[in-house]
Image (cartoon, rainbow, N blue to C red; front, side):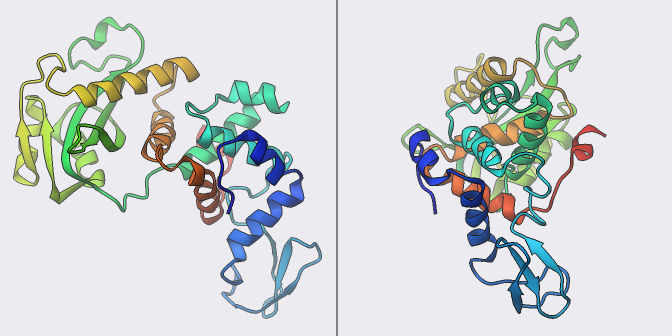
Length: 295
């Protein structure tokens, strides 16, 4: 398992496409082969060194088949570089910057990065516990129709963050919502907040009131964010990141960028293992194609 946040160490570990293929093989078949067609556990070596052939049905597959690296049209070494830069760099990298650095088309970098963002989404297996602050925000430029809680052309997002006993932020998540109703706000509660182990704090917005019957909740006055300093620090960081790296983001892809931001945020103390865990997730995720994101 590669552990490191130094680009020089990364360059020494992954020097060729073969190095990357071997890494994928160790992850995909490290615990044993299982045919993706018939489920057989018996195999022979395939025609190429990175392929395995099922002894029962004869199906031959490569280390990239059935993963998010499936049918990548550019060198696998460059794909690994994109994964590394996106997950290890403190603020990630835009597809334009990746394009210049790796001499690939911007659209190629963007489409592969969208696959990475899919792998970065939460497993939803570890809900927030303890003291949890929840708030909703609007993301976008100046829009006269977005005053107060009027949506206008802005993207609406609901955020939830753990507040540890030492006053520092723990894990956090963000979910795109269509409006500020209790039905939409409930999405992040059901997906990311424990009903049994969380004590939730929100502002006095009426949309949260119906949720008190299901969650332990305290509603307090926001006082322009003064009573939720950690949450507003998180909001500031999220908006600054979007403006600084991407400048703008469409409604269609907003959740993908939230996945990226919170993937790094929630692993900020475990940066050395984040690349390996990302590759493992990408190997275990079924292939996605560009039409998935553009239609």
